[in-house]
Image 1: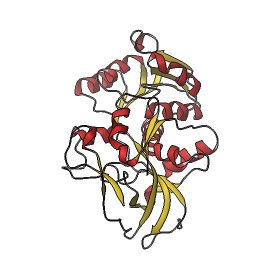
Image 2: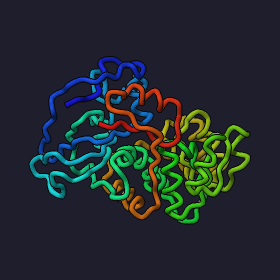
Image 3: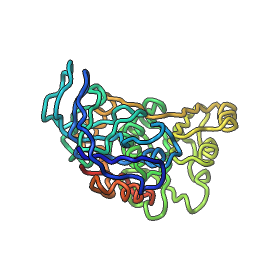
Length: 308
């Protein structure tokens, strides 16, 4: 099979196409012929060596997968050869999604929603599960609550806006000027241009904040949360911010997404009900993975995907 490998950490140019032996599914695994693989910011951080989840190279990046079942390992039930499937297997261990074939745990994938093609399905799992787990599992989102979602046009953010709306929340999102209209069309009740002043002057009485940005966003977000509110951060929250949150009776949840078949099924139900749309800014062929990483670094709207 063809796969995108890297032999050293560095910039996008370290990603090269190479031939590798076809994997075989072990017991409990499914061999998937990959049709599309989503690219996420964590991929770039691992590639560059900033976030050494996979140890030292060589390794194959990627966790988002959509494709067709090629073979079943011993003991696998619920799937058959030819099924269209998607998922985010093995995270944070190596899933090797940037390849034509991937052997993955059967309990970490699900049937692809009928309402999307492989490109959209391949772009969905990591960002979608992050949004779902952040809002629902960690944030315990309830209908009628006021939610602030930072970076509402990003990979996680644009899905989180839609998920929160589907669960009956009042949604406020931040975005840059050129992305305000996009976020508004997703269903956000209010969209804040973060270049025109501090969001804390415009958002108020918030029950839940989803924070994927970093910097001082976590600290400033405390100012808009109600007592009893929840700050869900995708990045580390420092001790001073945690102490301030405790003093304000605000719960802080530092989350990292995990494989979640039930979450995948819920995302699929939202898609098939017309309540969730995956926006893919651009696709690249497998042998242009470096160019895809460079494009993702420009912070496009939505997601970027590779096609195998």
